[in-house]
Image (cartoon, rainbow, N blue to C red):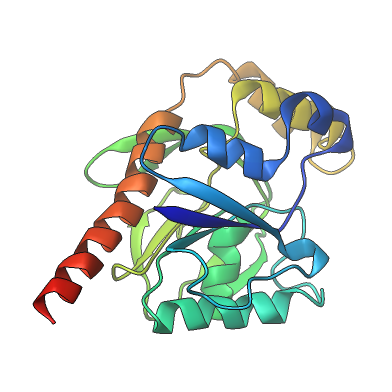
Length: 235
């Protein structure tokens, strides 16, 4: 199944040479699960011309805010709504989670409670996933069309499902321990309070459930494709 990665942010310059960039992280995370990939640098105004160029879409994280006046954000929101209308499945992570919610009528803002950084538990009802967080912005009002799949005391709308068409999560299953250490060192100082960075460093060795979340993301895409194939056979 061909998945288009819509890149909306970049890893820090100091880390990119050794660790790669956000699309690399997702291709590594989802490897071996029946998916292939193409990339578009949306943050440089490179957006697919048609929502059917791929069989599904994945929107990455970003240091930008969904509510900021960047010229590439309104076209991306239009693309999200078009994908939903055309039943092309979309997964969003962190910024991707937020921009999808905003495009669908929800609200994104800087959370008054501050930052969430490092390994964090997310209760999905059927199981709990421990995944790395790195955000202050969050979805403070979900769209009417979205169902809450996971919440924490800090983040009420930590994962959202839009029937079988869009699945979004606030945490970063693609962020490995080494990359989190790099973010804490290179991007955190002066941006995130020192006490929060120190606490995250103390928890950095917490085992993560990234492979299990990767399974869930892949299953979301592949189940949608199977359902679409069955519908075509019945038509």
